[in-house]
Length: 503
Image 1 (tube, rainbow, N blue to C red):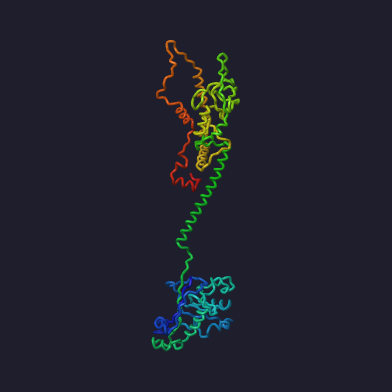
Image 2: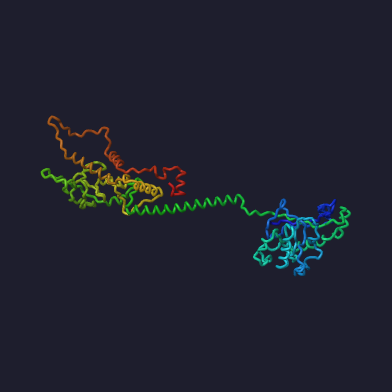
């Protein structure tokens, strides 16, 4: 409890008496200060008070009150002589108070360690509600703070917890004045100040008491935090948990992005073949792929090649050099016979058609494959091998990490769930076989049928360019964009930005 004000007034108490064999306790008859302030002492001390100990006591509306007195010391206590110059001999002691057990307020000077301990020990045996101490220096300013060495009793502050009452320090000048007033209001009714006016005004019993009554207005300092502080603490904890969780998830996701980036650069993961990310090959890299002149000599019908012959159904390795900057090199590809471009389905003309060979060994018209790789897909239309530059990797996002992780989990659950990168080869082999049959089949017109060599107009047939574009779209590996972050609701995208580890 923190003391705010001290109010001293003078009260008239009745003397305990006997009636019909019963004791009638002392009662408060008059508040002389309130009725006639001119003939009684009163003092209000506002502020300039230091709380030294805060032992709680029960209060009524925040007021601790009782009769003001000075605790008694032992007769053989050396402090009897030490305190004589500060405490008048006729000061109010407990013996001078009415015999009824009123609450008490103690007053004592803070002289030295031993005398202060003696006053505190004496007060512990009395029914007091609080104690006022002061440095007898006559100072009117506020006493030193509670941590000041002036209040050190050389016991490590143990004295603050030993007492059952709070202790407050008041200015030295106020303490000296209160001690002087206690010496004036300690005798009988005829010895107090303005006794004649009091007797003539109130006609008291000569055995009645006139004593100083002290009221201490205190404010209880709650040790529990207010509601708003609890709310702030809870919000702080929630923010800390969310922040630390988000930071940890971002850190883990950054490690996963870096791991996936390394795997993509090493060629272990094909993002487009997995349907994760649509990629295109830079045109300057496409132009580094080898250009050839298509050269194929079909085997003679008189000496059909054995099915196991390495030359059957294969392109000739002999090519002719073309003028200009076109690269004409030797090709030792062991792929099956490719009579036509898989994109536009036009046949290659031996020793005339310029073809581009991809690193996987498949050949196409340069204009077809250049447009396909630079605008539609980074995969070979036949075998779905990646044509990206070595070490190339697009920007890896958390969505890519989640989808690649999900694909690996599906693969681990069963051998039947995988991405068939050989599908293009099988399609090409089947298609080339049918083309061989078509090329080798020679049909002659019947004699009675006239052959019209004039080109017939194409009615309702799409142009070659449109057919080629449609064919390109059919060869592109589908990429499921609905599983990306852009296809999610706004709140899910926001949650994934904060907690990237959630799915």
